[in-house]
Image (tube, rainbow, N blue to C red; front, side, top):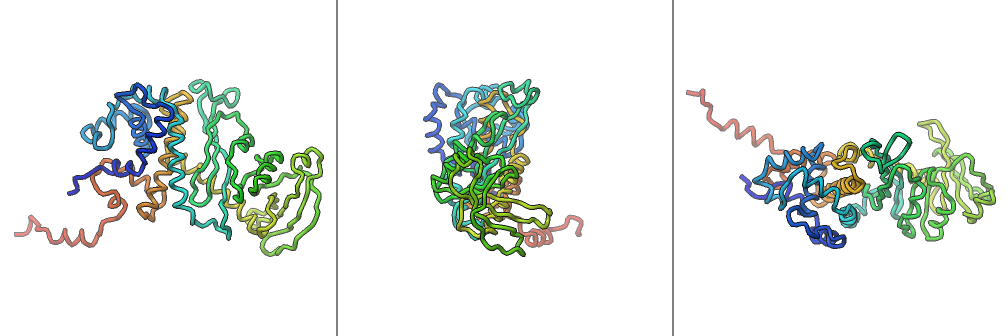
Length: 389
């Protein structure tokens, strides 16, 4: 029988503790905290994400039920609902935001060779946001509409491995397009966006920085065709034009030429138009790049279904952001485990297995490998039957 560490302790060792302490020191997170540290809070909320705990009282009850194991799981402070609530209110959420970025930097190289579904070696990002509804009377700082509250999670997703590289948590009123001002721009990379981000002044900043964008176009954008390229209409392509903006105000913001690709989707029976500043890729690759943007929608669906980001353990802005960033850290941790342990299971299945084995004292790899049913049946047959005389 294995009498070593719990699965929870083995999983947590994949977090770089020294990097976490750097983040804590940067914001003096443990200043005058002797009984309950930032690491204790991170472990508690990480445990809550992995096991789908509903409330602080739920976290307290579950962890206290295994009091004898807590020290060996990494906990040093006394777990109580009030202590957790105070930590959520007072410990700076930026500690966990910075630490999540450390994990993201570790995870991205592991997925650098993942396929995009098209022949392209460059890095491709998808940008979008999702809204998380909140009760305005409970979260008065998160005003969205007159009677509704919400926060927005703006995400730039690396489409190789679906790893979020940039995240911003804002109130529900912030416009999506304004987040373009804060994005890190990488020369040679592709940024796939939907029509809500069409702002030619901001997109020209990407163009000047040597980055490429791909977006849906709008019907009311006036453009003048300069030249055309031949297309294979049997592939669904309808046209491939080099265009310039005709409205003076728009042309002032984006004076260079753009490329407009039209495509007919046979499945949905509708015509789609795309704008990009890249003139070298095949037209069909441009359409495939935009189709891959759907991965960011799947990312939002995944974290809402499998992580605790729709019900919160605190009502302050600091508590909400802390929970969201720790949830992202857990998502990236699962992605790292998948590669480091060479697991074939999808991310949701890894999370499900962890949720029911955290307190087991078994090698973490054994938790993901099914036992040999043949050997177990042979062992059962070799046992003596008490009814045999």
